[in-house]
Image 1 (cartoon, rainbow, N blue to C red):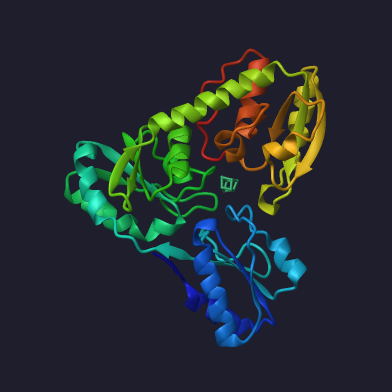
Image 2: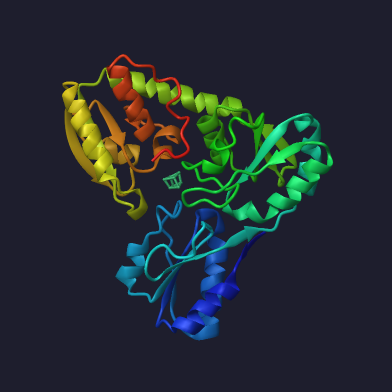
Amino acid sequence: MIVVDKERIFKEIQSKQPASVSLNGPDGILPQVQEAAMDITKKFGIPAYVLADTTWGTCDLNSNAGKILGTGIQFNIGHTINTESIEKNVVLIDAFDDINFDRVARKSCEILSGKTVSLVTDSQHLHQMENVKNILSNNGINVKIGKGGGQLNDGQVFGCEFYPATKLKEEVDAYVFLGQSNFHAAGIALSTNMPTYVLDPYFNEVREVTEFAQKLKKKATLAIYKAAEAKSFGIIVGLKEGQLSKLFALKFKKELEKEGKTVQLFALTDITGERLNNLKGIDAFIQVACPRISTDNQFDKPVLSSPQANALLKLLRNENIEEYFELPHWL
Ligand code: SF4
């Protein structure tokens, strides 16, 4: 069950006395966000709006919605990072999953026996790291937790940011992700090129995602080779506040033009196949917003993320592109 730190929300409202508030969180915890909004109105008698658009991470707070609604505080729930507020009037609130990992951790000991592993997880399971570390260590497994970096706490990863994992690459045999997210675990496997396991406490399952990650890489590499044949490119700047990267877009434009390609610039909030199909005369796209849009979705034409676009430039210059995902941060 997801537990939202409502005490913190109440304290903020008591001290700042806003006339209204807004709240948002990842799709998976929207029921808890709704419940928190109802509790706020009951306790303080003020309007509490649930922002029901997506918020994929601290890169996508949708703080503009709070501004349009004129709310005094926007609570973004469930995207814990190593700071509590990253924008004026936006407060980041922790949400933890209280599922117990004991059973699945013990189950993993046979598979992980004799290995040195690095534990990694998403924000919802950070508080379970020490417990799992103890279970594995008591069963003879050498466990390391990588130091935080960028916005990340120790052992934490995002879908595109992996500092605690990549820092330990030379010291471990495998990575062990706590939670259910193949999405995060595959990112770790791609950024480290190492075996990666998921400890899923809900299904009591230990699964390896290395092969799944390799399939994602194959698809991404194929898109790079297809894009190399393109004559006209569309470069898309993402309009989500934490994904705005005009400098990268302009850099790619300049480099591709040097290679004799024509380039048109676009800007989009949600980069979907449907929106791209409206754009004519473009053979391939580069999007400099969330890299996982390119790796985890299907498009009719190549749509490259920033690491793929860097690989494309290398390919056009006949350079090796082998390790293009092996970076601590893909943005
Ligand atoms: S993977 Fe995408 S949504 Fe997640 S933090 Fe990175 S840019 Fe944001």
